[in-house]
Length: 328
Image (tube, rainbow, N blue to C red; front, side):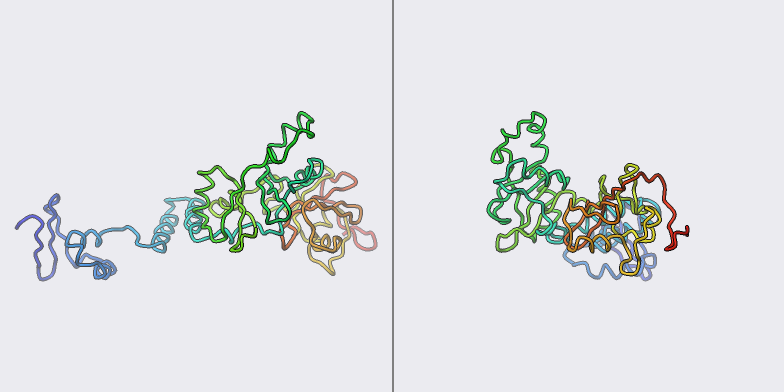
């Protein structure tokens, strides 16, 4: 029989490959799903293409790839965290800037005409590293101010020599429809860490940072102002604490020895919002029952993280007191 010839046998199919002359493949050994998949292969691919497709384990689409990766994770060939990052990377290609952008209302901006003494409190309170610089309004973007560019002037105590025009850097403007995988590549190639998002009318609708994109792949990237998921109160000093706004009033009372009522609100965030009377911005403070609350993390919808300053040191959770003063 000539090399590469195909011979039909009543109950089997024999195929001889030029480089492996002794291999025979029988139809009875071919899985049903593999036989069905071969019917979809175009006859133009020829015999070699037919058999190549028949025995190929390569996925043809993303769901098939996801199934292979899940199987690998179940067999402990790859770590679950690695699997999540791979899925995150695949998901990023289907997401757009509008899906993750910081909304316009939450942007912390610096006005082009402000003196350092005017905008430095905003820079310090926000704790950001980059700030959009605007002119007459939010849509009049002049550039990006890096907080680190202010350090030489602060160290030399030469704020009079500061020139906004000389310090700002060009701003990257992207449409709301920009895909995140493309944006990440642009961040890498252009060495930008922030892009301003504009709508179809050229108006600023928000901003996206490289951290926002990376969090879609690796998960949330926590900084020093984040509290661990399993911890609602974090002690920094005996009189300084970081507290999640979702901390229940009962737990807050237990920790700080307070007697806040649970009738109207379930969390300390509700009490703080009522005291403000509006949705506070970063850095806003309010005093409640001898405690000072400062907003450290918030978005356009809710407060996330609070700083709590106490008048006296608290070394451990205090017992909660009943109305009559008896210990509970």
